[in-house]
Image (tube, rainbow, N blue to C red; front, top):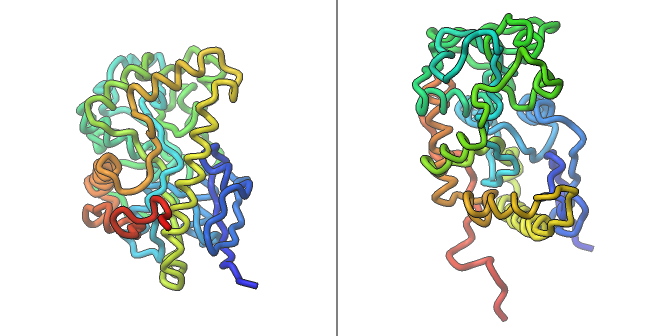
Length: 329
C-alpha cells in the first residue's frame, strides 16, 4: 500500500481551509494533521521559535525577519489572513488626537513590534500620513516572535508581564494603541477610548483605491528541510489550498450561510471594490506589489539588512505555463 508523507499544519480555523481540515480536499501524497486550536501569537512563536510544526500560518513580518536571520524556513504564497488595519488604531479620547500627525511624539502601545498589524500601520502612517515610525515612543506588551536589535533611533520599551496596553490606554498612560484585535475598551464602549479614524471603513477603501493593497498579515511557512527532502510538497500543498479556498468561496457565496440581514449586499460591495478573489494566492502582480511594500517597510524600520523580493521569500510553486489547470486525456 502506498505510503503518504505525514506532515503537521498549524493554521487558523477559516472557511477557506474548511475543506482541507475536514478531508474534502486531500493534498496528493500527504497525510496531513491540521491543528487549529491556538491563537495566532502562540502559533507563530511555536513555529518560528520551537519549530513544532512542519507548516504553519505565520506572521508575515516575523517571517521576513526570520529569513533575513537565516532561519531554516521558507514559505509558499498562500495568504490565509489579510485585513485592513485603519480600524485598529485606537486613541485615548482625552489627549486631543484628531488626525494622524497628532501621533508624532506620542506614546503608542503595541502587542509586539513584529506583529503584522502594527508593522503595516507603522508603514502606512509613515508613507500615507507623514508620521515617521521613529517619531513615536513604542510600548510593547509581548516578547517578539524573533529577537532583533532595534535601530539606535527607535524608541521602544518592553512592558512588564502585569501591564496591558489596553488598560494603559484607557487610563491615559498611553496616548494610542495599534492592535491586531478589537480591544476590550472599544467592545465595552468605554468613552475614554475611540478610534483614530471613526469612519475607518471609508479610509480603508480610499487606501485600497489609491494603492491597490489589501494587506497580507500571514504567510504559509514551511520548514526548509521538508522542501529539501520532498521538493514536490510545496506545489501539492499550494494546489490543495487553492482547491479548499475555491470550495469555501463558493459556499460563502450563499447568503443563507450566515445570520446577517445584509450579508449578500456586503459580499457584492466587496466584489465591486476588491474584485472576485481578494484572497488570491500565488505571486500575482497584486500580491507582488503588496509583498514588496511590506518587505520595504521591514528594511526601512531596521528589521532586515536588505530589502527582500517576493521571489526570494517564497519557494516556487510554478509547474509550467498552462499546466496543472485541467487534465487533458
